[in-house]
Image: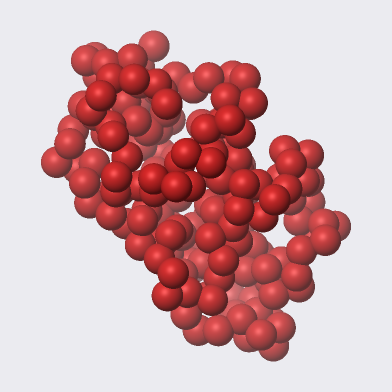
Length: 187
C-alpha cells in the first residue's frame, strides 16, 4: 500500500503520475526525450538498458522490470539476458562502448562526483560520443529521481515479471507522452 492515498490503484510510477498530472507531464516529456528521441546514436534499447541498470542498482523493482522489458523488446533479448547485464554487464556480449557507458551510469548512481575523468576518457577511447556520455549521465540521474519517486511513495508493482514483458511492445509503440495515465486501467 502506498504511503499516501494516490486515489487510484495503478502500479509503479503510473499511480503517482495519475495522482499529479501537472508533474507527470514534464516527467513523461523528459523520459520521451531521453529514451525515445531518434536523434541519438544510442539505440532505444541501449538507453532503456542504462535506465534498467541504474534502476537495478537502486533496487527499484518496478522500474528495472518495465524498462528491462522495454530494453529486451528493442534489443530482441530475453529476461535472462537483461538479468545478466544487471548482475555483471562486463561479462555479457554487449559492446565495450556500452560497458563503459554503464560504468559511467553506475558512478552517477553513486553520486555525480563519482564520475571520473578516467571513466570518461575510457568511454571516449571506445568510441562513445560526447552526446552519448551526456545522455548516459542524464539518464542515470533521471532514473535516480524516477526510482526514488516510485519507491519513496511505496507504490505497488506486479511481481510477475512476464507482466512487464507482455506490455513492452505496447509501451514501445506508444512511448511516454502518449501514455494514457488517466484511464484507470492497468496496462
